[in-house]
Image 1 (cartoon, rainbow, N blue to C red):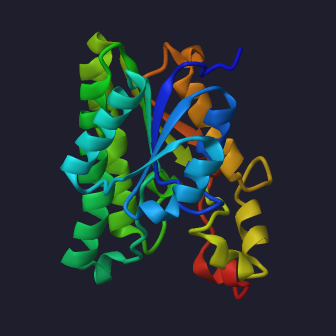
Image 2: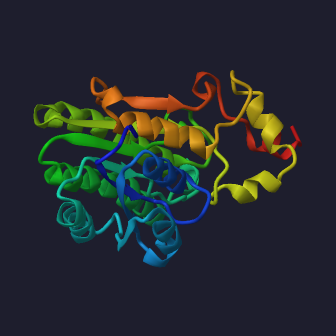
Length: 257
């Protein structure tokens, strides 16, 4: 029997045909889940929703009314909400000396404030327990130049996950985050045009390979399933071991070091 048979899942951040959210949606569908996809621009998820027989809903993670509405859609359409996965993100590259209020606000609104309100609204709709999963980043574990606001907002949510797990356990709701390494996707595709990038990263990875979006989807599936029923408040490291070392410098990535 498919391991998510009969379960209902909300997934944010599946716009595009090659990212962690879309890979997770496809895997969840294969495993029998009813799926509601949410995105700020709903046209970006319509094709995937049609392909999977999922429901596509406009949902801006920084808008609490949208979060409440998509949670209610799950309950109205399928009678329950069992799993909620948040891959919504924004990429603001600013160093400490270049940080701006605008940049810090942008990443905080999506990653920290949006992530917090996502957990709140999904938990409120889970009347019979469930699993809430949010995406963190390697940069939350390993300091990386140019990621001051981005990394810090991701790290903040990792701690919020622990607080939420502590509070929501009595409601049989598990809360965890997944930490991907540098992963090829729609968002990062342009970086892979740099011919020396792969070698620079692989040198710092104990397993010798970058992760792929399917690795993250598999981790999300495990956290969504009853097989992880004793796991909560954790940041699951899916970096192929890179968090044990470091990220390459810009010069190393460009092959000029």
